[in-house]
Length: 556
Image (cartoon, rainbow, N blue to C red):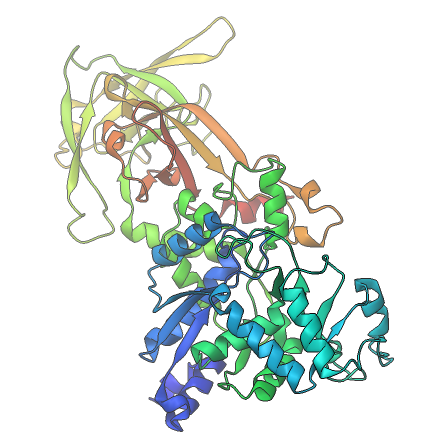
């Protein structure tokens, strides 16, 4: 038990203390509150795993609440994508809620603050309000509207609600402390006028609550016991507590943890939207994007993302996580789960000259040798003509080249030992065909030849091969922290996508399942693209077999 205590993160320690003291009647109710203005990314995955994971560990529940208080940027498309991503990660919410469910209640809360002399309608412009707030070293000054009577404020706020004023003409502000060292407490905005069609309430509301007002009150309405935010919300916590205290509502409590910062990518929804709108990427689910939908399309598994979030842990200090750790997690998972298949990405034809014309053998290949029992096997057709990788042959091989060249022998995976005796060139001097002899009694699993070879290469039977497009993805940015650059788009990696249009796959891959990982032997881990069809097979590389990126960076 002692070891378990040591391994708790600081939020788990708080929850366990609350459970020991029977705070909130021993309940644990968390919430995940995304704004539906974009697709979720890997940073959100950390918050999802934390909120849902806490509830699961302590037999509590998690609400999914959409923070839909900004109708200009929000859309039902994003709502649906968020729900899909959470379910794909393996989590279920207790209730699906929307801040817009509480618009009337939040309006009533605002009226309550006005009646208590704690809020007022201000006619100042945004620039005037900003100037009157002062600086971190100088106190703010009151605007001419700060001392309006309660009755006048109630009337003006009701008129704002009825749509009598233009956008920017009036706002509702909390009346707190213009000399507070915390700038967020210097009479913050609670409501603004916004004429825009809301994805759920239509045009019913011309005024919308600010995030800082809606957040804590929504938590209180739902009786959330542990409201978990990222560190940038620490300065907002006093306002969160002030509103709850003054309104005398359920005392939800906010706790902050370090958000996920990942190198070689950007996490800002605004920047991600730019990438999509300016066609630097195909879409929100482009496999180079750090979105959950992009990672899913690339072949990342829920288990690998949850493992990644678990490994980085929950901390109180910001740090940058290496993309290599995320790639390590998917390699670990796919090594145990991905079926092995053969594919040739840069094909050159091999003819086995002494193999009988027209003969076809069905060889046996394990699906996954890493798993006891191999998860079954599949039949692999073998014939006289094979595709092999171009770089598995050299016309003049150096010493310690253990693949094919004149006079050199290799084993064909799951098949025979072959020896190269000739090759053919075209008029440009390019090798177009390799001629080999096979050793009939060297068949894998039945080898009585006594021959020893140091190399094994993969292959695909020419008459049975399935042609496919294969997309090789690398990191989208060339620098560790693209967000710090003056123009983050100038650091986009021009080699982040390489499309191979004439790859050949073993025929079993014609029935590959979307969402399942496959190891293309010797090449990497791949998955069927969501836009693949039976007529046009498309596979995406999820990750290489080894961390080749680190070597490239070191060389550079």
